[in-house]
Length: 128
Image (tube, rainbow, N blue to C red; front, side, top):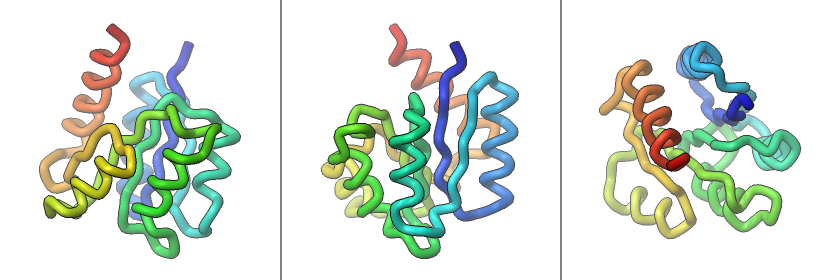
């Protein structure tokens, strides 16, 4: 069965790149650009992805608030969330951990291929 992944990212180029890479790797991908508050959470609840990749800096949505909503909503609370952000400060990392983020990855530390490989490795390790 294909794993489903929801990618919430406002950078159109990065979003397209991630969507393409994860699709090639056999994932069913749904995307959201974090434009309207509530849309991302609705998509997560409807789509029931196996994993969520979440950017914290979104146009009109507070990524921290969205993470909190995802982790406190009964329909989405058990879905592992990968934070993929440019925020490299310890406060943001700690805040995300406290809000329930499962992984915290910093964009500048990864090429697209490396990031996809890292996520796949984490998913494979979780399956054992």
